[in-house]
Image 1 (cartoon, rainbow, N blue to C red):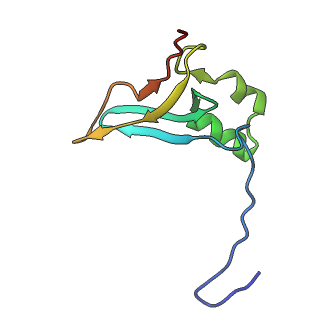
Image 2 (image 1 turned 30 degrees about the vertical axis):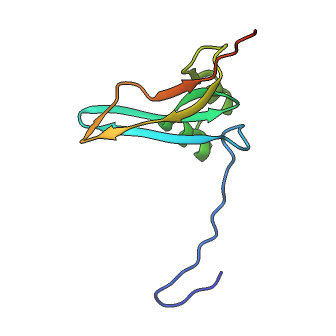
Length: 109
């Protein structure tokens, strides 16, 4: 560790909590106005999942087992949906009621 009177370099250890190596998007929805969401939205593999930020925090610190986090996953879109785009919008202090996502449709001719 390198130390100066006004500067201390700290080596942080990171813990891999989610099983996604290359998610398309991560969105943290915390508090907006009087509503509290405390959710992490993960767009990966053409689908959307929601995790509790509190549960992620506990797993990262080793206070809760990984299986508890896996059991609390909420799937936002239908199982047969193919999500290609996901955005969450805050406009003038208000959020859209749901995160917007675009679905790719399959048509056979």
